[in-house]
Image 1 (cartoon, rainbow, N blue to C red):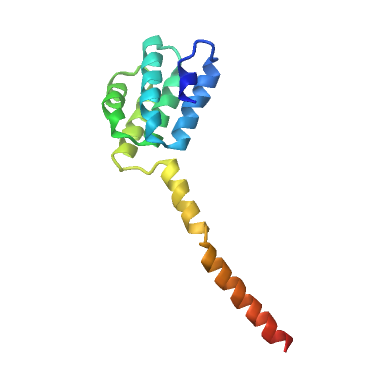
Image 2 (cartoon, helix red, strand yellow):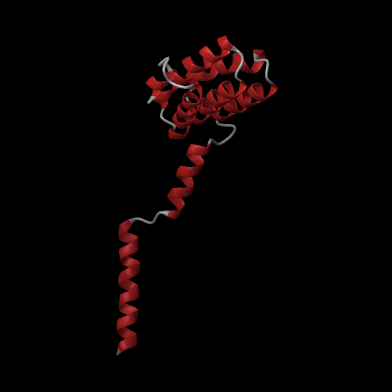
Length: 134
């Protein structure tokens, strides 16, 4: 998927969605491609949404490999929004702010019951029903 970021035939909007998807996935293997995408967008300099999305994605991925680049964005990007997103991304990577990926994983862990617990509850319910029938 990350290869789409570097194909000339890929539409800019698709690249934006790919960067966002890599951030949502949260896999550290997406760090370098998103960093390269951010560098290309910084060189072009005219699409705040692309830079902001790339910065946000790096924060969601959470790899400290991106800290130096993000620090450069915090201090030098022309957009207030991108600088603010870069600061938040650094804070996520440093553990000061939670990222959405870890929050979603934690929420799912609370909701999902192991199969053996579900079976135990079903057996208990079945036993109560059988007792009621007697």
